[in-house]
Image 1 (cartoon, rainbow, N blue to C red):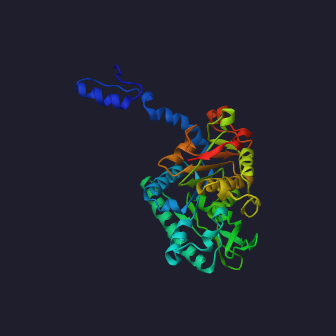
Image 2: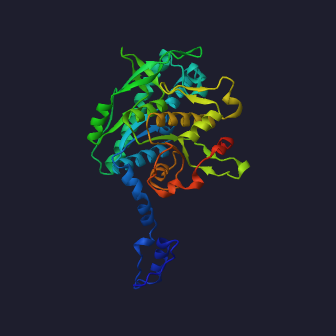
Image 3: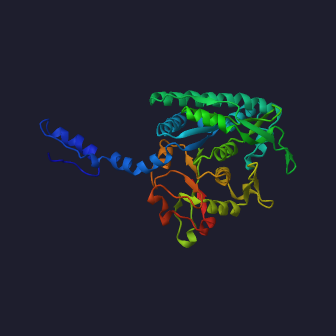
Length: 374
């Protein structure tokens, strides 16, 4: 039979031509459907990611956005369907700040160190953290379980006490009280859950050897967990992501989607940000005040880049910082050059798709003179 359609829009054309007469036979070649080429292009990624471990970081502000939260959970469930072993680190910073503001009209000490991304945790704040962490954990479990069941999955979302932690103590004259960092992860238990195809969920709470609870920064926890499990990827979701562009001075003012670890370290060094390798504690240079040159979203982007490189230092292959928009995760993980965010890879990483290695997406030292934008 003779196919009669516009190759640019075969489905729409098929519908319109069908109105010409019920006796007219319409044939659409399978190769003309957009999803055919997309599926073929995505197949190297599907194969490459199968049976690999991935760590997702879910910020608290994403949970407050019902539409985006539902979309992200649905896409995470789809990555499980593709055979990925999933760990989720969930944050609840926004929920804690809202509680403190309702109680005191301001966030107090918990919000005073925001430029570092690490807050002072008082006994009162710790109690609120325990409550809000339970709420956020329940919301992730509830929605992710529903998304998995809708896809026919037979698995559970499990959480528990997997983290041993230590206090930061006094850093640069600030007593961080009940704020700490992870020191050990019960990897054997997590591997056993993964062997049963379960999803593991972590909250930003760790416990000392004496059983005392500590506030663990959820982004740092995600990086630590990814390294301890030997994950192939870590994904940071951001409600207000920034994109990188090269310097306009050398005519390379293009969007930068993929950079190597060494390039990321150059960018962080340019802005004076370092992340301690053992504790994950971020620090700006002594003579640098980020509030003078960077807005909150730019600072948050650099902090995520810092924890992403920390994960790479622990052996993770690639780190992604992506938007929470509908479908952004799938486009980032399963397409070539269509990603929504910024990908940081090991310097010797070998991409599964040749288009991932195109020269026009590489970064030179000139990116340090570039800029971040929404």
